[in-house]
Image: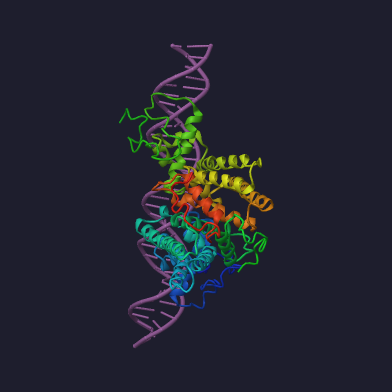
Length: 242
Length: 242
DNA sequence: CATGCATCATACTGGCCGGTAGCCATCCTA
DNA sequence: TAGGATGGCTACCGGCCAGTATGATGCATG
């Protein structure tokens, strides 16, 4: 069977540019194969994205590198040409997911508003990140699946986020914009609620990540108990947030 | 090498009756092997517990049935003598974890208090369940890891919980005990925050599940924004709840 | 056209692990 | 004390899959 080069998977699914995600379209740079874009970085990122997509749908352990390669219409050694192993692939997805959050924290550094407002902004970015293509990888990167070195690295990144939230909570309690609370527990609750988005935000993406984050944040701010001032319905069913 | 029966794992670790968990002590019914407790159900439950413990520490995919067998100081076919396969093992753990929550909902059926109070009670039980030995299995039982039948079964059980929370939220909005909100998003936020306990409540169990749940619930009820009435610290750092 | 580099495919290996076949030991019952 | 029932073990199989050995192809440069 000669003449069967560079076309392992006939056309299982051209990855189809995820319907309503972030504006980052993903059209595999291999495709018709004859153009040979040589930009290594672009292809490498395509591999990362494809991995994130596959992990997202099938889980890390149920995704083989052959799957990822097939989605890109290349073969497994090609994938290995751009990343060193599967673990690193997951790590890259993790970093891609968490980087926007770190950026949001850097933005929230300068205190141009009270701490609650800055926390709100950070949580909004957080929610969007979790709802992104890399959210699953970010949230579900288990220490158990990784080598000790990677595990430590990921843990430190996660801890950085956690500490950032706690810090904003403390600042808010100092400047009076946040109700007194245990910063550790509160940070766990906030991060947990947002992290969990990655579990249910899969099918039916009727709300954008920003909308979800906004809905959550208003709930966190107001609480369940009716406020004395305005107990009437001002925003009865979300959906018009943001 | 004769005379090597019934002692595969010399004494890797007698499971040691987990340090500070629920009062359900777990002492493997095989142990000295000579007593031959015949109660099949007891041994079966020991297998489930051991599986939950192992999944909890190492994750489902990183736990082999040999691991579970070794933890019980028996061999793999013995495990298969009590459960049909690994998937069923995970399912049993899931059910064991979720059953207390369903019970809490049944208790919350009779409206002897306003809906917010009943929701608070349910969430307390929810948090305790997630912090239990089976919490991880309950929270992390992924549809991807299961056959379609089991996946559907689990999904329906999870949905039952979700709908229960939404119902209490709606009831609370009707009886005025809960601030108007989108019940779907709010239920996601509440369940997510509580589910996430399973991720960080592992080492350092300085708080009990009930304490954590109580801390979360007060935060959910009050929100982050300071209340007009009492903005002073009444319970600045948790730890003395319950 | 020759050489070298970058890119990628075919085809394989080796280990792990879920699951099973077949056998043995002990206990219960008659 | 025979014989089934119960409970368990050793030893194995087969599939999946991460990762690789080897080499082919195309492009750039001289």
